[in-house]
Image (cartoon, rainbow, N blue to C red):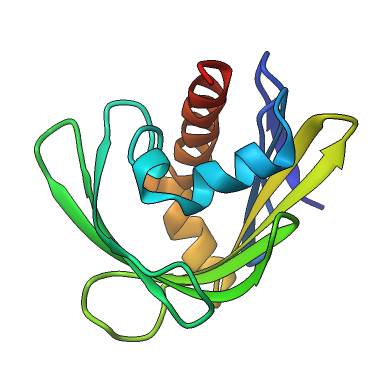
Length: 161
């Protein structure tokens, strides 16, 4: 059974055997929320936990396309990332393999769903890993909290629109 933590703004993070799920309801139409995820001019304004910034080097938003970006930590550490899009169903669903900059096997798969809730959008990000051990390591690294903070930042970005 997954454990769940809830904050006042309804962001949740759940951990299952080989998955981490972060979800939230936004007071914004799903087309706007989907665009925030898929347009380089938007995603750099909110992607990552608090204190991080993101620089997009390229974003080829199509199945098989790659988003290359660097997350800059508050301590000055750079974290290169590659995302390879595996599924795009606008504006309902987005899936991608997330890896580092080494071009090797993906570190994990992500499935993002955008459900219309009467003008609001319920977003769910499901990080699917190869093993329970990988989930444990990601949880120790702070992935569930980082995911909640990322969605908090997305909420702030959407509220400003």
